[in-house]
Length: 143
Image 1 (cartoon, rainbow, N blue to C red):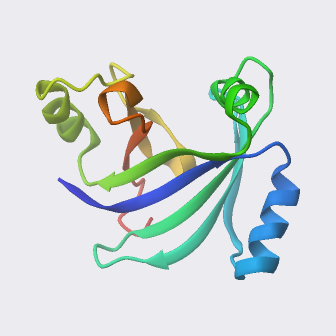
Image 2 (image 1 turned 135 degrees about the vertical axis):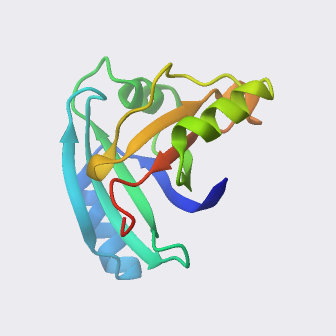
Image 3 (image 1 turned 45 degrees about the vertical axis):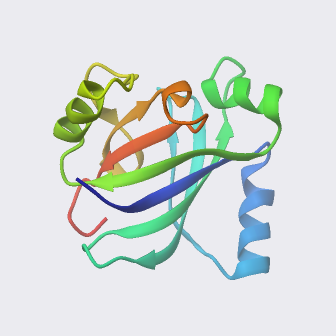
C-alpha cells in the first residue's frame, strides 16, 4: 500500500523567499519547479532524500497564482505553514478505492496530474484527523 512520505506541502506567500530560507537554513536545493494552472499554484520541490523503494521524499513549497485557488484560500484562513502530507504509493487508484471503502472521503473521482507528472488524489481532512492527505503515484519509478 503506502510506501513512504512522498512530500510535505507547505503553503507560502512568496515562493522565492521561502525557497531561499530552506536553501540558506538547511541546504536544500530545488529539484523541480512548475506552475500547475489547474490548481492555481507555483511550486518548488526540494528533495530531502532518496528512499528504499526507488522514490524520494520532498518538501513541496506552494505559492498561489490566483486568489480563488485552494492554496490561496487556505493561506488567507491559516497563514503560511504545513498544508498537507502526501504518501507515495505504486497504485493511487487501488489504494484510494481501498481507503474509500473504509469510509474516508476521496476528493477526486479520478486521480489528477500532480507534480512532475505524478497521479494524485486527496483524502478529506475531516476524515483524517484534520490533516489534508494526498496519495501520489510517481510518473516514473525514480521519482
